[in-house]
Image 1 (cartoon, rainbow, N blue to C red):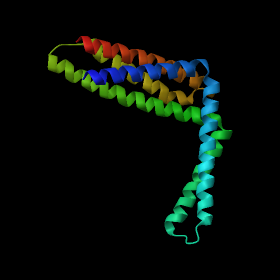
Image 2 (cartoon, helix red, strand yellow; image 1 turned 90 degrees about the horizontal axis):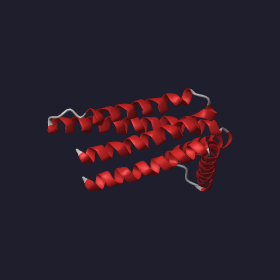
Image 3 (tube, rainbow, N blue to C red; image 1 turned 90 degrees about the vertical axis):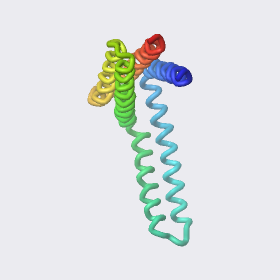
Image 4 (spheres, rainbow, N blue to C red; image 1 turned 180 degrees about the horizontal axis):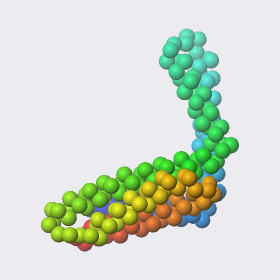
Length: 173
């Protein structure tokens, strides 16, 4: 149980650092990540297409791999030339992650509250706030693209601080 709390605190600190970086250098971070991921996808797609044409015997599996390579290639070009796409995707993924982990945390806190046969409202309120933050991240993709990444950074900072408080409160109980 103690190792889980330590790993959760370390993960929260990492999320806090990512949130701070996204808040301060939002445009640079997303542009850099989008271009790097796009370049990797383009290289991988090119390698798959080249391997398809090098292969003398083409099976059905090879044709599927060619289609997959072309799709990865297109995704790579989208990531390189349309950086805002990554911002929306990251917002959605982070929001889903926060909602899932918060729901699991809420159910665990409710279980602990029932086992101790006490009402621990702080252990129930914090995960509900985290769920709300996750939903804001998911819906945040509808905001202006320039604001999205800073918004995600702020949400990650708040989420990580709440998670650290939750771990500390749970340790005391």
